[in-house]
Length: 378
Image (cartoon, rainbow, N blue to C red; front, side):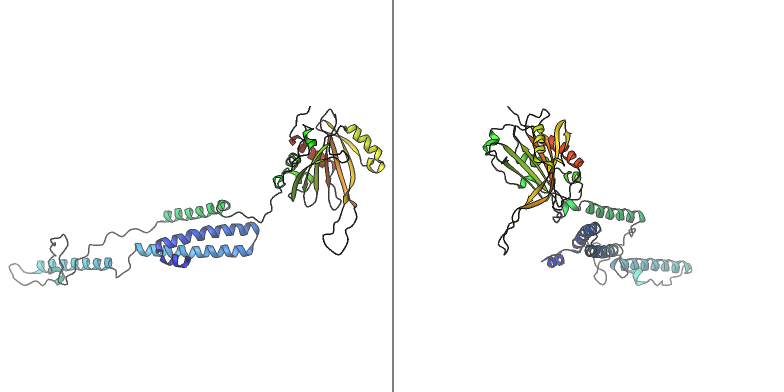
């Protein structure tokens, strides 16, 4: 269908169309090839540009042939006839001057000079001569060819069009969909909060925590700036051993290297009481504990191993019992400066057991906590 359409189109419509299409596609493909270091794409782009150069050469030759008539054309024949008539008249005048005075010698006049001019026809045309054909008008003054300045301007215009096609290619051509995008909190399904959230007016939801934690620079703060978030989720849960009476929303962002979890516990336990509770847990936890202050609020660092659970989804082996997972580092920060009760937990862990520095957790907390929307309390 495309080939038939190109054969039907006139030359001066088809060729400029092929030049425009070849230039845009060739320049765009070459740009992508250079950006992605793709040799195959570079060969395809070069083929488009060579094809376009051939079409430009064809159009230039046709344009010059149209402006300069070739010898033997009608204009050239008319010019030759006019020159012959002029030579005949000059020959007759020379013979008249050479004859003696008073003599009646016949003067030979060429047929081309003796032929009378055709009289105008009644309808405004010309009557034919001996052969019945009307004389052609004299050729006009030949036009000059393109000068150097015109060719330079045309070349600049072509290169400018190619540059514009490359720069605007991302808007005209379809976008590259192979590059993965960071996970969005909007991908998670909304769930209705339990009744504990209604009894705690200042409680936020898991969606609020997810939006605050899923920062564009979170990977950089963790020390892995080249990574993007694989998943982002938030949930509206309650604290364990509270019979569903204490709201505890949480959000989790997962990268290739680290996983980050942010939770809020709306109980009456202050940070000072939480520190004493850690001391009672034994030297294993207390040895990794370190107090700090975040945004003027009391805070404490602690470490604890995660739990690893494996499920069998139909294989021959049985499901493995719960095992000790990699170590996780947690920064607990009071909900407010007065430390009346409740706290945020910022936890980071990895499958390999590697952990970022405590300063990285402090930077994350100082940037994430102010983004959590405030809720009015009673």
